[in-house]
Length: 565
Image 1: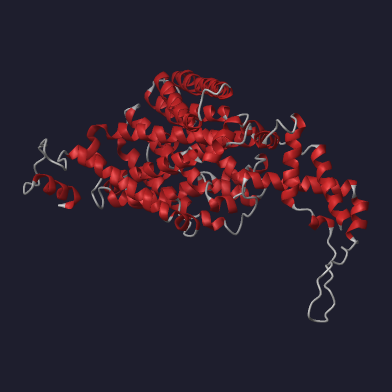
Image 2: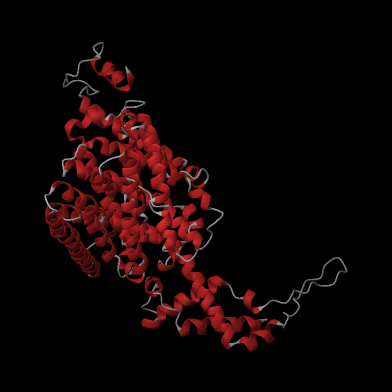
């Protein structure tokens, strides 16, 4: 009878098959209401229990939250528990539901990824991001189509359409891999930034890859198809989405600044504004028929261009909370959607072979080959990590639903193949991040990396200016400390000599820089901690070296310690 049958028995007494509602019943017998209540229960229970052991799962077992959420979806889905069966719940509107749910999750994730980039990151790393969005993405599309064509034997046009679905790097899965304590400890910060920026940007660029082969397939004449594609897809959907995204992001930033300056907006509204801006951008661009996924990423990048918005929302962690809840909910939903019965119709061994070939050769070879033209990847290990971690996830589901809903393609075998590839990416990419623990160990967080750069510049300047003084002062020992008489006749302890480089505390240097930067523009009474943070954040975002006053103050601190010695 199952859990739903038990609810029927409780609601209707002995007649467990009747679904007639009565006004006096306490437990509703309506199956739609009962399904909604069961959904609340299952989703809340998973998020609660996963939160209790999240540190163990992610930092000790090295499992991504997407992997665990998808496994839970399989358990409650039609293949196992049958507690949540999407085909029965949504019926003929199932594909539209998948399409819209994917749209909301990806658009929100892309906007958050744009906000998380430090200032004008896209401008500073334009060459690296451009290489990943240009030659690398084209290679990924063509190589994926070649693998699909060779393994399954489909027509070349259908292979290109399916390849366009799996080409974009998924921002939802990438977020679950490049965030967290493990990622902060073992994955370089600039590599995480590059993966986040590329995954959010190229997720919106999958539209022309899906539409071009379809136009070539259905239209008479390649010239007409390419012309129609350039006008309707490239110019209208892509270029116009970028323009609208810049306008919405710029207007939102100006409006928030104006309201904050005049005291019109409170803290809660400021923290939740990014969610409202994401929904506004997605709704406006969807109604206009432009690429709303790419547009939301542009909105987030422009919104955080000067880091003003970041400073107002960083401490709350509201973005991470919303992002985590949406991502877990989506992959639970995906776990219930996996078409297990359709895999046999396509051929299991072909699905396994195609998935392995795609994950191995779709991205890794071209990134390793073009490493020298991607400045953000400094070492071979970083290039290998970036080449391997190109996860396939919500973006592939979204574009497969575009082909089904908008382009009226048959969901079989398109969706079963895409679903199996996504499942393979969740397992392999989510479970292999721990393999890089021993290979990549660099900086941990943005603040720590910035502090280390400042400290290195300060010490190098001190070594050049005061090298002679430092050499002479390091040989001076500290005077003997006055000790109280003891019961034994042992001589008083004499402290060892202390070098100047060890006497200077790194945190003192960091605070000295912060105070100096804050006092550079405003008086001490007017420039508070927020001004100091703003100055240092802007300097770090622009890549500017520490000012001379900061070096002088740190040098003065070193001499003070030396004189006391």
